[in-house]
Image 1 (cartoon, rainbow, N blue to C red):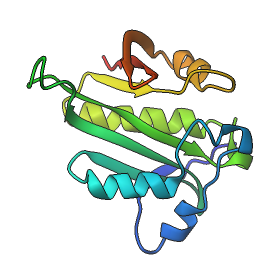
Image 2: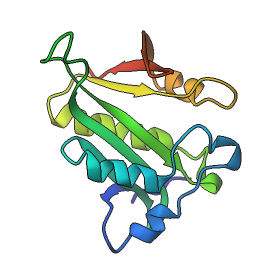
Image 3: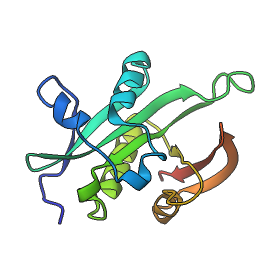
Image 4: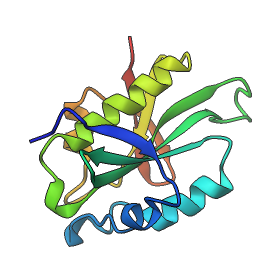
Length: 157
């Protein structure tokens, strides 16, 4: 059960090791990068990455990283900017308790706060794909691919 103290917090020196210790189930490891990889990407893409620990009470139960206001395809439209969910890692023993839904809603709120009206996400297709989770939250496929991953959008109206 999710507590009323559920929140997203920045990754800091004080919680870094606990955040890096978040592991998804072994059968999901091929679907999402490890938190350490995400934090390295956040460092390299500091202007657009928004990494956060998902905390319930005093326990880190997951990690989420958004991308905020990136130019999607400058060759088509340099003003076309997008924001959305880049990574979502919920600890293996904490899945199915609403933490992922909370994280997506919190990222959506941050996008709205910054003036965005849509949230985007991609996922690996195939067995154990998170596609049903994202579709269940209202994301709809755009027909685009990012690499080999389908792109979906959630209207934030």
